[in-house]
Image (cartoon, rainbow, N blue to C red; front, side):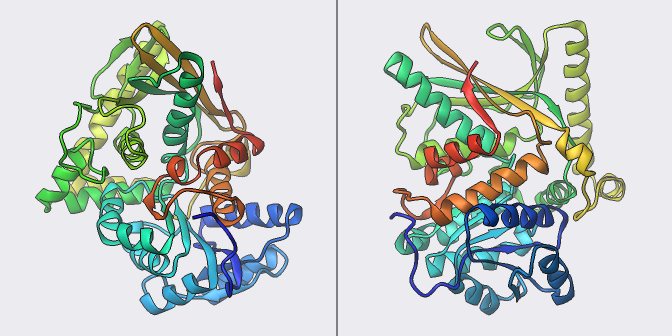
Length: 405
């Protein structure tokens, strides 16, 4: 169903979590965009004083006091808005009632979650209801996982244009990056690790490369995560494990399944980190692999998890404006089918991945859901399936890059 205006809604979009660090950045982004295109929007949260402070900073934006854990309050918020955009995590704690309310009310939704277990729970609980109401429930609208999801989709469109058929295998390699790690991301990882310690089904889900597919147990091609160092001859670069691959790869595979397997049921997606093909690049790949191994080891042990939680950035904390603005990221997508080969690039040269660039990605996702004419169906979906080319155009206009190498 197209993103037409819904009668009786007070707001084009509402922002939940505006009193946090990332939410504050997003409030500033919406305020700036509202100057170019007038829109009705509001801030939602449970702390009235903090909400009003953020509101004053942006010219008196309306505020709605509501607790994300209160089903009735979230139902009221969802009924009043066309889109709910939330930065309030961990989502396993603060996202369930919001998604339920949006699915029931036919209200579009977008967030920053990278929590595979939360997404699986929302798929199982609300996908069918969201399909009925037309609500597009779009998780992973930040660095998790727009570069991977939309980058793969865009690479395939270019591959089809050039060669007349889709690539049978796409490998995404995340390379040159500068920027800090979000405290919210660390908190989510710690929460998932703690839950997995006592939940065998959760451990099975996290180990399943197709864990977010409509049928996670269907027979599909092997697609193991990268756990060791290798060499990519196409790029002349070393390849090492990538910390976000376990989330991103499952989102890409869900997108392909939801789209009806347009690239073939034997399509394989792989994601890793790249390093220059030099001695220094090899050292970087070795250090990254060892570091991720140590982090994974620590997450499985309660005492070490507590030390990680103590020393890591806390939720609500973030880097300086200078660090955000001078950060950057770049990913290369190597698409192959037989002798046909294409290298496609997704990048942001002017924004660190966790904050400045993520603000653009989530902000434009919310605006796309609110204002663009989209033909995609409702359901618990992904950025590429829900918004595709419309979001791609918005992100390019916002300064991101998507193009053949």
